[in-house]
Length: 225
Length: 401
Image (cartoon, rainbow over the protein chains, first blue to last red):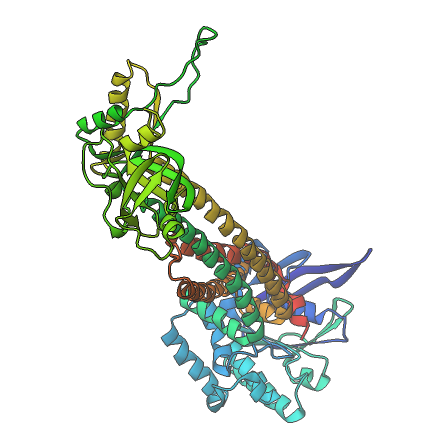
C-alpha cells in the first residue's frame, strides 16, 4: 500500500540545511498497525506528514496504492487525501464554531456529497463512537476524550484506507487515552491501515510493527508481521 | 463542494466572529449609504431644476436679435449692425403650422408711479399670448385683454411685489397709474411667482407691446417667445422661424433661435455630471471599506490557520480554500451593501419628509452601481487574503494549536 524509496526531506534553517528525513526506505502493507517512535526532532512527524501527502519529499519516491505521488499535482493529491486518508491530531483540530455533527460532516461536505447521504453517514459515524447524544454540542462543551472521538469520527466518516494519528493521546488523561487507542485498534481490526506517531513507549509498544526514528533515519524496524 | 455548502460555511464563519462581522458591515454600509444618498441628492437637484425650467413654459423657443458669427470684414466705417426684430417679424411667425402661439416682448425700465409713490421697474411689453406661453397666473383681475397687437392700449398688469410697493393695502385694481409719461389702468395683478430667466416676475409691469414700444421710442423687440404645437414640432418650428425671418431680413440670417430643450439639456448634463462626481467621491468610502475588508480577512486568515490546515488535511485543494475565503469576503461586503442601502433609503425618506418640495429619490443606476461596486471591492480585496489562505503550508498550520 505504501512504498517509500530513498525519501529525503530537507529544511533550510538560515544558512544550514537540516535533513528531517534522510534516505528513508519503507514499505507498509494494507491493514498493518504501525507505530513510529523516536525523540523529538527525529523526523517522525515529518514522515507522517509525507505519508499524509501534506508535505512533499525533497528527493525520493513515494508510491501510495501503486501510484507515484510526486507525479500528482496539488489538487490530485488533495483528492487522494480526501478519499483515502484520515487524520487524527494531538490537538483534535475541531472547528470551534461548528457542532460535533458539523465537524464530522466537514470532509463529506468538502467532497461535495449530497446532504441526505451526509446526514446518514455522519449519524452512523457518531453512533459508532457512542457520540449520538453529543451531535449538537460544540467542541467546548465536550471533554477531551469526546473531542478526540469526534475527530476520529471525522477521520473515519470518509471510510479511509489509512488512518494517520499524530500523538492521538498526547492531550488526554490515561482513561480517555486508552479509550481512544481501543477505538483506533478496533478500526485497524476492521482492515484499516493504522499508523500512529508517538513518543510514548507504552502506546508505541502496542503496535504490531514498531519503527524507531533517529536523526531522520529509520534506526529500527521490528518488521512487518 | 456544493454551492449551498460554500455559502453556509461562509455565513457560519460570519456568525462565528460576530464583532468582526458587525464592524465590517458598518464600514461597508456607511460607504453604500453615502453613495446612495449623495447621488439621490444630486439627482433630486437635477429634477428640481428641470421642473423649474418646465414651469417657464412648454415647447418654448426664444428668438433673439443678432447672431454670433464671424464674417468677412466689412468696409471700415460701415460696420455690420444686425437688423432689429420688429413686431411685424413676430406676427409673421404665426404663418408656420408648427407654431401654436407667439408673444413678442419689448423690455425697458421706466418709473411707475401712483399718487406720490414712484418705483423704477422693468416694463414688459407683450401680448395676451404671453399669459399661456409663460404659464403665468393671476392673483386678481385679468391679463391684458385681446386686441390689435400693433395698437397700444392703456392697460397694465402688475407684479405682486410692485403692487405691494405702490399700493400697500389699497385696492389696486381699476386704478390709473403713470408709467413714464403715459397713463395706464391696472387690469390685473400677477400671482406670486419665483424669479425666472433672470426677470423677477413680481417686480414688473406688463403693458401691450405697442404701448411699450412707443414708451421707449423704439421699433425693436427684446425677444420673441414662441410656443411650438408639440414637442415633436420644436425643431420644425425652429427651422420655420429661421427661414421666415431670413426671408424678411433680405436673406440675412441675423437672429438666434434657442430652444428651451437645448437649455434644459445643458442643465441636465451639468447636474448629471455633478451627481456622478459626488457619487464618485462617495465611492471612495467604498474603496476604504474594501481595504478594511482586506485587512480583516488577512487577520482572519492568520487567526484561523489551524482551520485552514485542517481543511487541507481533509482534502480541500487550494482552489477550494480560496473559494471559501473569497465567498466570505463577498458575503461580508454584499450584506454590508444591503444594510447600507437600507440606511440610504431611510435617509432619503427623512430628507423627503423634511423638504417635501425637493424631489429626492435614489436613482436605480446608483443603487445598482453601489451594490455592484461593493461586491466588486469585496471580491477584489478578498483575493489577497484568500490566496494567502490557499497557499498556507498545512504542516505549519496544523503544528500550531
